[in-house]
Length: 357
Image (cartoon, rainbow, N blue to C red; front, side, top):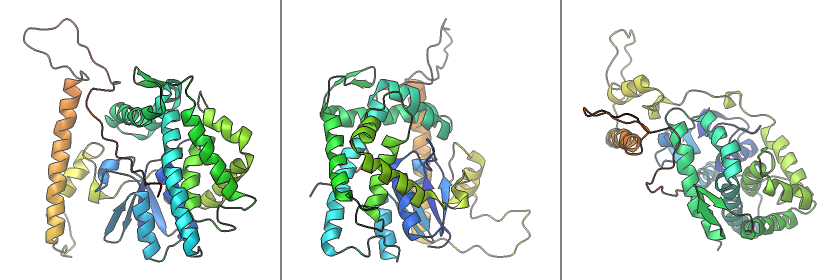
C-alpha cells in the first residue's frame, strides 16, 4: 500500500472531510497504515469508477466505497479487526449496520431536511468545496435525495425542506443508536476495548459530524452533549487518536490525471483522454510507454462515452431548468433563471444501507 492515494471530499468544520464515509476511511487508515498513503481532496465522485467517494488507488487497483476499501485493506495486511474474535466480528457487523442506518439518516435529516441548517451551513460548506457548475447544482441534488430518504420518518415537504417541528421519530432513532453505542463503550477507550477497530472508525465518522459542526439547529448535538457525555469524550479521544498525524498531503492537491475532470481541468482531461498515446513533439525522452491492455482500452472508451453523455446531460439540465436562457429572434423582455434550484428530475439515492441482519 505505500504510495496509495485516497480520494475524498475535502474538509470542513475542523475535520479532514465533510463526508462521514470519507471521514471513516481516514480514521481507519490512521489505525492501520502509519501514513503510507496520500490524501487527495478531489471533491468529485465523478472521478470514481462507481461514482462514489472515498476511492482508494493502490498500484493497479481502484477501489471505491468505504466497505469495499476496508475489505480490500483487510485482505492486504491492513486489518484493524485482526484481534477480534469470531463473535466480536459478528457483533461489529451488526453495530456497523445500525450506525449506517440510524446515524446516516439522522445526519441527512439534520443537514439537508432542516431548512435553516441547509441554507445556513450545509449548502455553503459543500459549495466551498465544489467547482463550478457543481457548486450550484450538486447540493440541491443531494438535498432532494436526502429529503426523499428521510421523509419516511414523518413531516411534510415544503419548498424542498421537511417540516418536522412535532416529529420525534428521527430523534428517537438517533437517541436509541447513541444509547446502544454508549452501552457498548462502557468505560473502555474504544468500542471493543483498548484498541480502535473498523467500528470505531465508522461510528466516529458519523458522530463527529453530528457533534462538532456549528449549525443553526443543533438538535442532535444537544442530545449528545446533554445525555451521552461518554460519547462526547469518546469522540474527542478518537479525534486526537486518528487525526494527530495525518499525511502532509491532507491539504488540497491535484487529482491523478487518470481520472481528470473535464470541468475543472479541460485541457488536462483532453490531453490525458485523447492524446495519452501520443508522444509529445517537444519531449526528449526515448522511453517507450507500455501498451495498454484491452481492458484498459475498453475502460478509456467507456469513460469517453460517460463524460460526453454527462456533458450533454448537464447542458440540457441547465437549459431546461432555466439556469441559462437561449434567446430567440422574437426577443424577450426578461430572462428568467438562476443558479439555485432543485429541478424536477429524479435523483438516484446511491447511498448503500446494509441490512440489520
